[in-house]
Length: 334
Image (cartoon, rainbow, N blue to C red; front, side, top):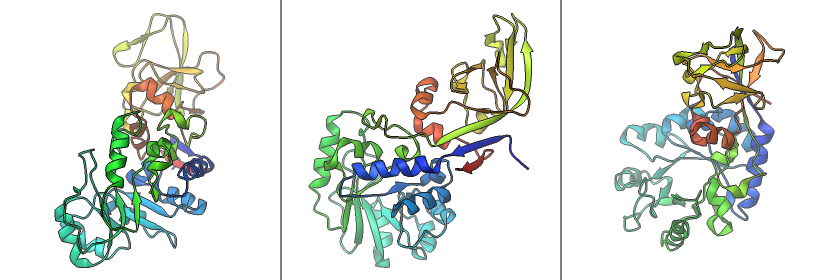
């Protein structure tokens, strides 16, 4: 049964974003983070598009995501960022994917397999990662990684982390430090492999990327009902919007259960800002002002979802805007 919600996903924009990031990576290979089901777009489809464009290195968070992704195209590699728990070992040793080892316990767990791995070293973020003093003997390390904490800002911590990473005396085939924002910091952050995520999907990691990153995700909702709200009457829970004049209102089949969160209440818009959101976003429904527009029940409306703009309007991060889009959407690639 056709859904009353759909995500129009622009495959050309996705690959164009990757190619720009690859170009900014200089001589380094450019991979792609496809965790959280490809940031909500559908990881299998994202991998298919990017592999066809030339991407060879992909990253997920967990082994469940690796299994859900399924086999990669020939010659492509997959890394599992959260390492390997005891519960993961059966799946991990049967897989061609590499764990990114983050703790001494993970190192001890993986070392006896003799299989390749990646390693994350913490250079100051204090999230995941081993210390430079941990014993890594006996590991066949493909990619040595670290992660920048403040790459989206002009922070002295960026240069400090880069210097700490460059100084590591750990044998590995490749080194990888930069995410989307790190790529924008310059070629000295690229090392051998970059790991963009947000910018692939239309997010703006730093102002340097303005004009180069294209919108990929276009949520569309069907109108459930069109009604006239007389002047002086309210719309939605709490009547937080009161019509100053007779107002034509379209009720859209979308709400916070779909990832269009309450933060868009009286702040969001649709149709290239022609139709402002009126009152509170509810669980499954959102009201917009369509006065003067020739649309009604059954018609489709495109929500304004340019990530930097929608983030500023809602107060949500660009990451939340992407990954919160729920399973109710039919995902349609073009």
